[in-house]
Image 1: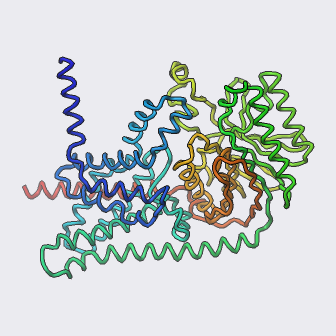
Image 2: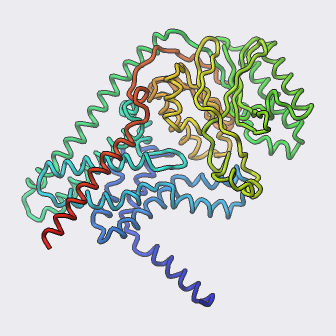
Image 3: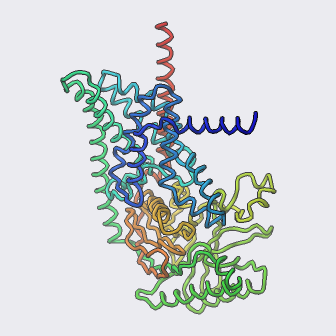
Length: 552
């Protein structure tokens, strides 16, 4: 094949891909974009998928349903996660053209549930549109919501996100996350989407002047959605009152100061001043702000420095400068007589490095925690241990070791769970800590790579769900913002500004445990929903195929 023929063939492929994108796909993209940051109109999530439902239900072939769903995934990921290019460029020191290309690749897989769900939902929505029995329509609507919610949560995603996360701004509805996590909230939203779709489709395609047959078919789905959402609202009000009572009368409090020095990239400082001077500047900024915090009333019981605040390994020095820094921070804590929890680096006897948190006490003792859940392609690359040349190809990746899992670290008699950045996205990780007795989540995070738009808000909102699910308060300490205190109902009661040095001195209520299904059963809803709905769809599909064969 000549170069010209090859180019012509590639051109035809691309034209074929882009030709015929249904305009309704862009309506769903726009509504989903409005649902999240920066506008966070969460109520759009109750009907954002209706245009997409219409597209796949009426797609002439399963292949076309998948193709249109791919474009929903692509464009929604592209506009909602545009900041991924900024992170790739900043974190990986990758040129902008390559970062933009990698963003396009990410957009193709950012929300894979859309094209994986296309064929099963096409079948279920088709039955929902054509069956004349109201209870069958109701059943298939329930099945659509269950299957999508389960698939959306179970498929691997970089940011472990789902539609239910948009309800972080719905104060009462978000409380239902303690039942089945964000996946359960997605299920509630899908019931609303299905009900609205059924009502529109039946009225639009009723084929007769009378509206009663359409009403009769649509009413059960609408009533179910209204009943479930009203029920979730009432449940949320009950939980809010329960949490408010517990916070108003805690068994004790912990005073903690999160130190936000607004230093995100020590490498940039090092390129300008040399690493030794850069490290001294970083620590001096933290020392000065910490001293200011200790003058505040009430005086902090503990100081928190964020992820990677300490610019080298702690108590495993490689140079005399490292040794001197260790002695300096030990002297600081001993002289101020206050515990310090700080992010830094650890190294084991084999020389393996870890992203870690250290709890340093005034008497010189310390306990530490090594990050367990690492960021793929940021802190490790899958397969790099088997193929060492990968490490040489990507020197900007840290290739850290992985820690032991959830561990409890005690500060001033309070049991805390240290969590480093990305780990807070995983409900099971936090749930395991609370099962072990954690009374507070200490979240050490570095969001400086994300820039000022989109990602810092997104990361914070996802993190807040861990407090709702477990009913445990969370103190989040970041390098450049947002540092926050999250109460057990998900309310952010204190928040620092982005990219400004700041001290956040807060009183953390230590409350009696509030039982939740998420703590008792774990992250159960998403996988259960997918298993149940998937099995039902398989049985129904087999039965439909069997019936068609009998008619031939």
